[in-house]
Length: 82
Image 1 (cartoon, one colour):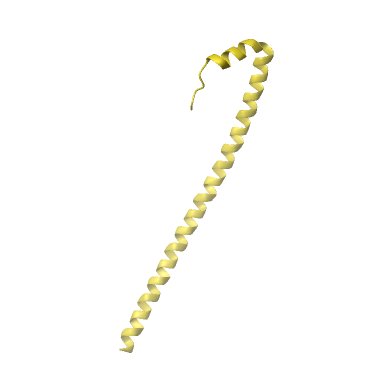
Image 2: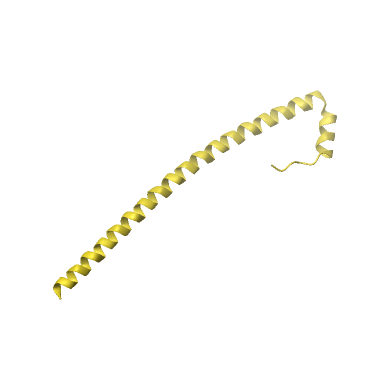
């Protein structure tokens, strides 16, 4: 009977160790993925800020060239969703 109990304990311990290893590996993989996504998001935010600054500069240039035409274009042309 003691041998059977010892065998059950060994099997259960092995299962728990294996499960813990799998969960640890999964957690590490998820952390790596989160780090990559965080880096991508930072890059996207940087690019968006640069694009917004460029757009603001272009609007300044267009307004300086012909403010009335720019106002007309903004009122008559629909915005495009990308």
